[in-house]
Image (cartoon, rainbow, N blue to C red; front, side, top):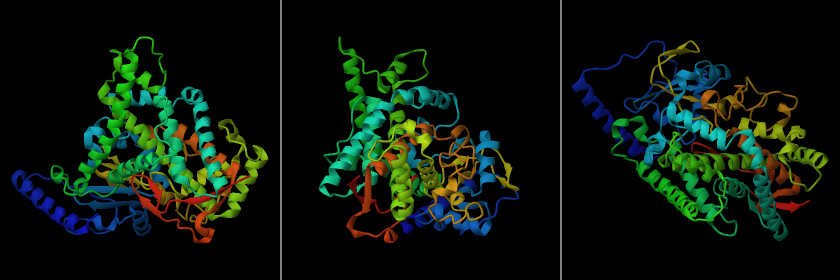
Length: 499
C-alpha cells in the first residue's frame, strides 16, 4: 500500500467524519474496560503497525499486550485474539454474537459479499446456501461418489511429474497442485478440465485467483474509513471488479453452453453439480435463482483451489527443508502403501506420520492466518475486557500455532508432536483451528483434507525430490506473502526422481 496515499486519504476521511459529527452532534460513547493495545496515532490510529505481514505484526504486538488486544485502524475498532481459550469464546461459546462478518469493500465488487457463503450474514439466504453446499458438494456421500475423479486428477498430476522426472526438469509444486485442484473442481462442477498443463492457462488462472485473494486481504483505506467508499482511492474495488468479471465471463460461457445443451432434444444430462444447481434454480419451490449461481461457483474455485495447493506447497517445502522428516514420511508410505503407488483416500487412516505432517503444516502455515473477520453483535466481555458492539474481530491462528507456551520449539517443523495425539483440525481443538470453528467453520474442510492427504502422499511415495538450482535445504527461502491466504513468497521448485 502506498503510504502517502493512505495518509492523505485518512486525513480526507477524518475531515469528512468531523464535518458529519458537527452536523449531527451525535456520537456513541465507547464502553469502558477495552482490551489493551498500542497507543494510536491521530486519525490513522494503528494502521502503520500492520506492515506487509499483518499476522506476524499482530503476533508481535500480542506478545507485549496479551492474548486480546485492541487496535484502532482508522475509524474501525479492531480486536485481535491470540490464545486458544479466547478463540474458543469467539468461535464457540459466543458464536452467535460473532457469527457475522465485516466485509472488505473489495469483496463487494459485483455484490459478491451479498451472495457469497463465506461473507453473507447469517440469514435464511446463508442457511440455504450452506444447505446447498453441504448436500450437493461436501456431504460424505457426495465426496465418496466423486472419489474416482480425485484419483484421476492425482494420476494426471503424477503423469505430469513423471514427464518432468524423465527430462530432468524442475516442477513448480504450488502450480502443479493448483492445476490438480482446479481440474478436479471443474470436473466435479462442469464435467471438464478448466486448465491445460501444456499451455499457460494454469498460470494465468492461478494469477487471477491469487489477485482476488490479495485484493480481498490487503489493507484498503476504504475499509478503515468507509466514508471514502464511493471514491475508491486505491482502486481496489476497480481491480477486483476486473478479476471477478474474468471469472464470471468464464462461468457465463459454461452456463450458457449447458443451458443450450439441456434445451437440445436427445442430449444426455451430464448429472454433475452444474446440472444439479440449474435444476435447483428452475425449481420454484427452491430458494435459489440464477443470480446466486455465479457467486457460488466463484466461492468454490477461489477458496477451494488456492488453499489446498498452498498447503501442499508448504508441506513439501517444510519436508525438503528438513530431509530427515522427508525420509520418515517416505519410509512410512513405502512400507504401508508400497513404493511408487498412488495413495488412495482409504489409505490415509493407516498413515499416522502423513496425517501428522499435514497437521504440522496447518500449525505453522494456516491457509487463512487471521481467519475471516468476525463482527461483534453486542458489547460483550471476553477475557476480562469489553469487546464493543460493531468491532471487527480477528482470530490470529498463525500466532496461536507459534505460541511457545503452547508448543515446544514452535518454529521447528516437527510432525512427531502430533503422533499419538487426538488433536484434529475440525474446530474442536482451539490450539489448531486452521479452518475456523462454530457455525462459520470452512464448509470445504472435508474435501480439503481428502485432496491434501492424497496429493501430498502420492507425490512423496512416487518420487524422490531434490531442490532445483543446487539450493541446499538449509538455504531455502521460507518467507511468506500475505493475501487472505498465506502463500510462499518464493514458489517452491523441485526436481523429481522416479522411485
